[in-house]
Image (cartoon, rainbow, N blue to C red):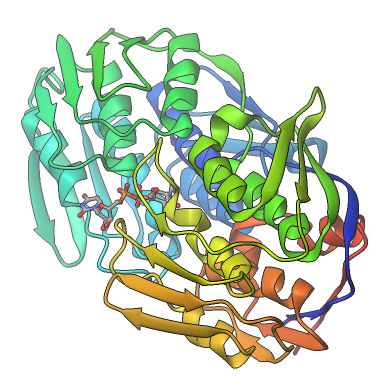
Length: 423
Ligand code: UD1
């Protein structure tokens, strides 16, 4: 298995290009299943999760072609030859459940395996299923699969009220509602930029959607959707991750294509910790004001709050802050698995349930560590950039799911980092 070797070597300077959003792309791709006309996505990130979604869509009869080195995804779902999403593909990635809504809406039925994904908590899909039931679908859970059937005239518009704002459930319900009969209102919808990006793409395909980006989304069902070409929104999590590199190491890095509106809550916390962020024409320019960052408290929340997907990376920064920071994880119940690994590098962290107390130390020391999930793995790389000596991060296949060319991007601003091929 490959590993990544990082050696802390001082300030970083230069530009890092930010890719299209993994999480947006993973919901835009299944949208192809809603139409028999081509859907083309530009600015797609080159990641193993995108390959997994490609494989899944192809298994259902869609054509998916990666052009221009994978940055353009040309998709077409003229015929849905198979309405059965198999466990062998679905188990690799939780976002696979996002094929259920589109298949149910267009073909009237679907069988989809219950998903897998990062081991960061129970992560059920009950809210997705409740939304389809509200739209009249008949659901049966058998042998690890969801067997779903729409009523004979197709899904029906409904009022769907989520008890909390789930990103995936909002996306699934939104896609399904575009082809339902009548009006659907999604209440307490997630407001993430990826939802707005999905709605933009669906509108380009002919859907009638209003209110995306707010807690109430209204969808007027249409008979059919057409084709479209859509540019995937910038990845705000990759953006935030690379913004932390100069924050941890010093220097000045511009994250190309970055926008403040994508990361406002995160930037507010960075500012309190002593990190300057300036929006320029090129992107977001980041530098540290003093020698050491200040401790800050962080609470993860649905957008527009501080993203859970940046919590591990923020913890890496706060390990060397002056003072004690409290990090409260409110989205996933088991998302501090990076804490014991950071401790191996000399960090002083106490975890109690959903809260982590990080007592800042002056310096971290390099150590062999293990990536436990996607965002945890990159937090260990960030910590390694600031540590004394060499850090070897193993199990980097997690990283490949969400970060393209991480070694190339960080080396280009002066980091000492390499990938070592394993058996
Ligand atoms: C998406 C992102 C993920 C991010 C998360 C929260 C993708 C591909 N993934 O995941 O990177 O960390 O949003 O910002 O976009 N829940 C239920 N029942 C459900 C659905 C969710 O109980 O039916 C719970 C989950 O277990 C979790 C919380 O709701 O505790 C939030 O999950 P959700 O917003 O649905 O996250 P995902 O869409 O899975």
